[in-house]
Amino acid sequence: MGAAMRRIHVGNALSAFGLGFTVPYLYVYVAQVRGLGAMTAGLVLAVFAVAALVVLPFAGRAIVRRGPLPVLLTALVTAALGALSLGLAGNATAVLLSAAALGAGQAVMQPALATMIVDCSSADTRSRAFAMQFFLQNLGLGVGGLIGGHLVDTSSTASFTLLFAIEAAVFLLLVVVMATVRLPHSPRVEGAPSQSAKGSWKQLLGNRAMVQLCVLGFVLFFACYGQFESGLSAYGVEAAGISTSALGTALAANTAMIVVAQFAVLRFVERRRRSRVIAAVGIIWAVAWLTAGYAGLGHGSQEMATAAFVSTYALFGLGEAMLSPTVAPLVADLAPEGMAGQYNSAFALVKQLALAVGPAVGGPMGASLHTPYIVTFLLFSLGITALAIRLGSHLTPVQNQPSLRKSRVVATASGARGTARPATTDPHPHGATP
Image (cartoon, rainbow, N blue to C red):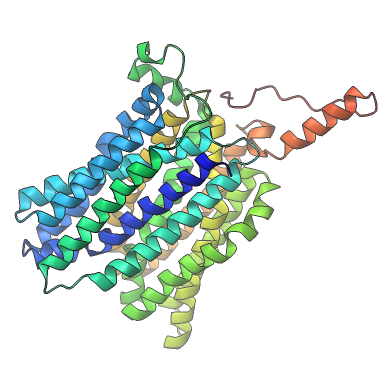
């Protein structure tokens, strides 16, 4: 990694640390510590999702026109102000406005950092760069949640004020770190300022492969991430009788699997077709849902049910480790030159939609409709496999399997000596829409 990529990865870790530092304790802070009630606390969590949905359509356009670094710095300052004001807010209006600023800032960080990774990596190193990003994000979330949990005291408002002040300081520290990043080339497109936002979205929606990837992404996030802390946890408690400590163990098993498997899985993933890797994730997650079904609907002992439930989260982690070096680089490869910011923001918007809808659908089902819940999300996982196979037919060979790029270079070089067969031609240049 070059100096720029190292700083970007520091940015990924610190931004995730800030998120994990406070978000798990927002409900308790608003409802109990500030005494604003459960309804206001629920609205705060909803405001996070709404703020992201509002700003992300504009974030992509801003990244294309201004570059990812200025957008990232603006998002960091906005998030810092939101965090600091949230720690000082004493009434519902102030809390909601502060949450909107914090949520908007954190939402824009993701596509901005992803675009910077694209700009600082090559097609050959991109999968590893995004795998490192995912690894550091999970590490940051885990460490942030762990430290934050030891700092908070529900009987002390000052402890939460300190928590949010530290989060704001982390974001401002990140401003200083990221301001030193020197991108290797400008991501701006010639004539981009004169192109309307409507036109850029129309161009994106005209890319059939990207549209199919967005549909696939929605199902991925809806059937997995959207269930972790809502439907699946409610199902575990109500149907499988899982204790809160066992639920914490399951979440730890998910993170541990990602940490252990990420770079081991990467070697396997880099040599395979991306569509087949995603299809395999669908199968793995289908097994995870069957395992969860056994935990809550089987007739084994409580120990067996707990082991099965923990294994469910571990299997989800294995699938996540396979997706991280696959999906994000594919988004970048589908983007035309200079449009990575627009494509990253569009995919982030799809993710936020799934994370907003997933808990709303899965929560009530997981708590009361146990068998339909398992069957529904088992079918969604099999749907991931079907959608991935369909997506593969709309990708060029190199988009689907970047390792072919190296073999083509070798074949071309040896062909220049007059000894090798002609290289297989690619009808679409790298980065062009199919």
